[in-house]
Length: 190
Image (cartoon, rainbow, N blue to C red; front, side):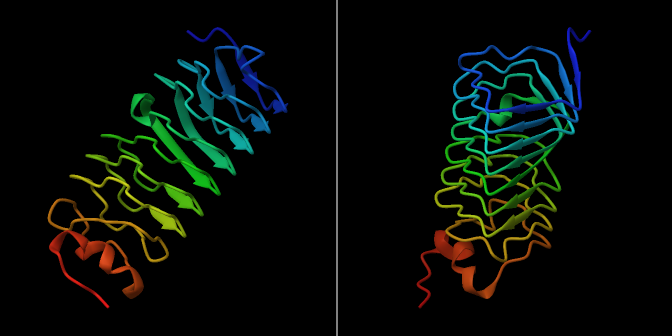
């Protein structure tokens, strides 16, 4: 049962560290320049919502639903996405900072990461097949037993993906970044 239902509402410049966010379902809502930093945003449903220029750093999102949600120019540092409600989970990220976040064991195929910083992000045992990493910095991102089949890394950089420990069949890489696949083999590429 949903306590509150919010439909097609716009939220702008709200500091949720000072104004408590209402629990409930937000459907087709837009959040612009809002601050969610370090708050408990647990058990909230976001359906077809957009977050623009928002700060979600260290926000607790346990059992929070993100169903067809778009993050644009947001700061999402240290988010444990692995704790969200996985049912119908679907989101995309453009011009976002996701450093130190975790997607551990999540099934998020067809996810778009565009112009994102993904430093030290944990993708261990996740399924991110058929996804796009367009112009993304993956410095020290962790790929371990990760399904990356048919994902596009052609413009991604600073990644280290061991083909023996991850599923990469059909994934696309550029010749310029092929060293990211060989880093674990001690091969020197000049």
